[in-house]
Image 1: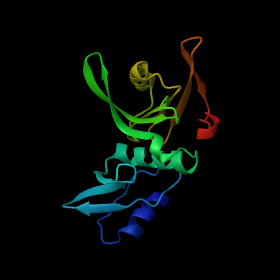
Image 2: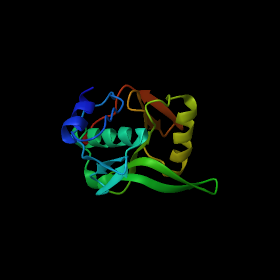
Image 3: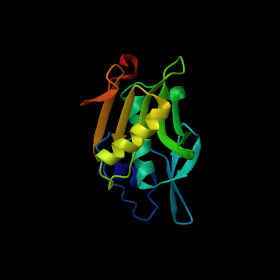
Image 4: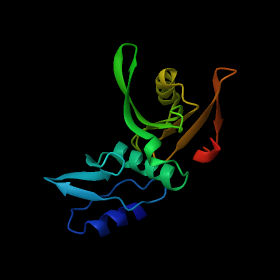
Length: 167
């Protein structure tokens, strides 16, 4: 509910924009509107993006990584490309360490999309290319954290993800 208030206060002349309240802290996003299309400013890519439900989740999760988990902005890649089974795909968020190693692969879904085993399988296929130490799935309401167990070639699910400096 608080997220809606931020949007309304920041842009009082807009028609009602009622995003889904998420299970993430609210952030003061820069929301604009042009020709009945609502945009959100992505501070990492320094551009306005169409505000879809998935983008709403992605921008909140990025801010949570930066603000709460102390992830350096410069080590976060958004919508990076990868080739999987000869098809071009994109991972939502990929976080690196300062040595360039892939630490966390994050897949964001719209709030209405349930986090299911098939969603985890999609992220796991992407991670077969990336080899990140963590996979995170989020729809903004539910968050799933899985740490790679290299010795067993499997994942261990956890209740939360550590801060950047503890990875």
